[in-house]
Length: 176
Image 1 (cartoon, rainbow, N blue to C red):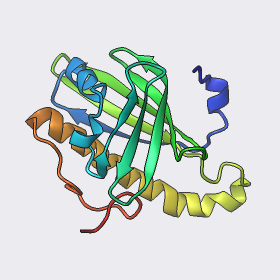
Image 2: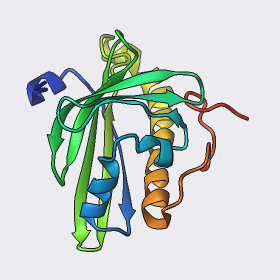
Image 3: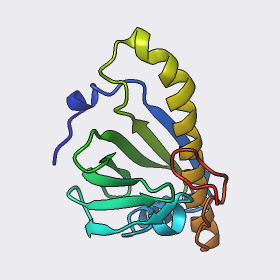
């Protein structure tokens, strides 16, 4: 499935968070492309069933501790660099997500996740600005920070991330 930059233009105001990881970019790539890896790295992921893997037609699901289930449909797979995907409920609206790895040096890389949320995209800017700025951006930024901390933890320690290890999230985790 091809997802052009032109189609990406419909998504406004992306949210991007990066994390420097003391591991080679190749090790980061190997980790983020391991089937079912979210179960080990993602602090809000209860299950990560894989339906098709790897490549631009890959598909998996994220079963969150909150009870939500979101499906990830990969649209671009760039070996050693990253991938792009659409994520959302089955049959529902989808957000666009871009994962990228940059090299600091041979032993250090940066993992960057950028979300282009679908929510409020069809509303006029004057209406969507307030909820987007004060609700969506902070929640998604906190979410991405926790996810990136989880990948850093797993890559540098080899230990699976525990449920809510870096704090809870009101959308994606359960408080227990």
